[in-house]
Length: 97
Image (tube, rainbow, N blue to C red):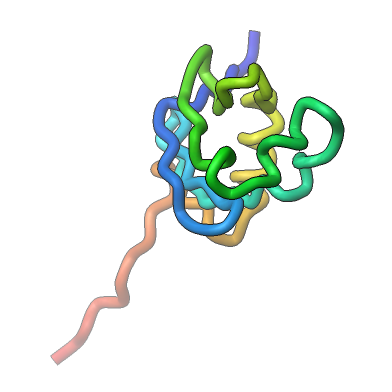
């Protein structure tokens, strides 16, 4: 069985963006606007209601039961230019002097 991503932390940023942290340490700011269509997601189009999210069952959930599969969120997060993955190391060039 492969890796099963789970959201372990979610922090509101701005608009319809939430910063997500996954169980492998990946962090990214994800724009939720593409998923805010359909009856169950209609309340989330109101910014005050959107901010009422919480983490449950390894994903982001709202009081009305709306949620998005953690695999979908992970895919969006890892495609994001803002994604930070702990396995990637950034090294600074050494200065010679």
